[in-house]
Length: 166
Image (cartoon, rainbow, N blue to C red; front, top):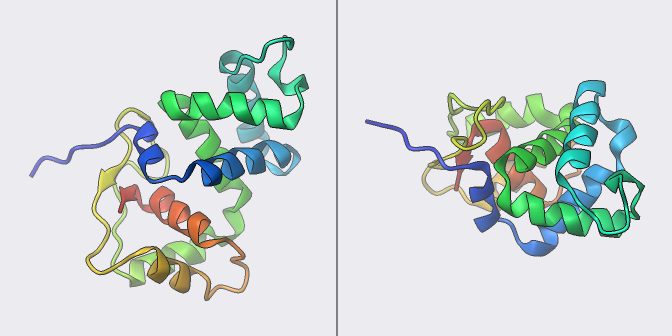
């Protein structure tokens, strides 16, 4: 059976606009906490792709303006979406190993594309295990005392780690 993959921007169908904004804001507000390579890549891509009137360097713009401009790119550019998600996942690197164990115990498999997503235009597949919803994922991942993520963040973490959309 041939596997069909959706582009990274396909994730926007599953994200509430408010959560998408929070996600991007969290990334830009926590740049110092990112790993060196991921921070460098985020800053480079932001300077290349995010345009804000009145600012040559979008990183000089106030956070709300930067977030608003980044939201537009996140919705339309799979490469940018991948960079934001990579950065967001890096902020939660401390919970990923246990989260992956918990996801596998729920019946999740890992896509051949995850977690590196070399081609952001062919990234995600559809297929969470039967009878698994956001609440069950959140419950399973919240068993880890290190995991302080919201239900939306845990659902996104499940998608990111496995490569499967609900």
